[in-house]
Image (cartoon, rainbow, N blue to C red; front, side):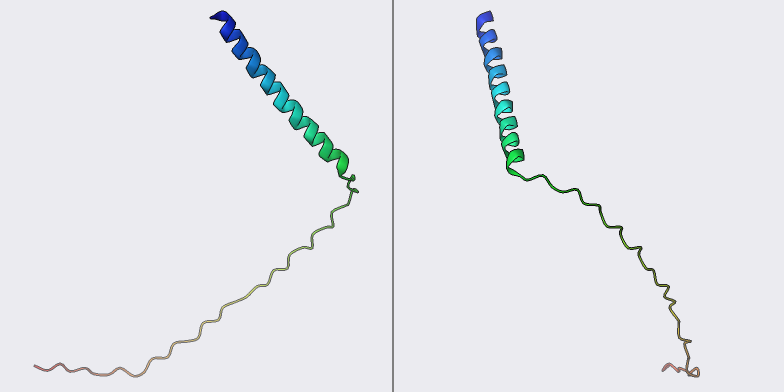
Length: 72
């Protein structure tokens, strides 16, 4: 039983190391194919412009009051 657990752990570690080795090799190949980017200084962002807008309210004009009569 001990040998079975040992083989299981060794198989897991072997696969784990193999997968990471392949992944790192693939990333290394991608890094070699890309030309190095030239360092560019980022352009300063223009400062935002804020506008102040005042909402003007029109005066409400009311008509003369009317007398309402209900039928009795």
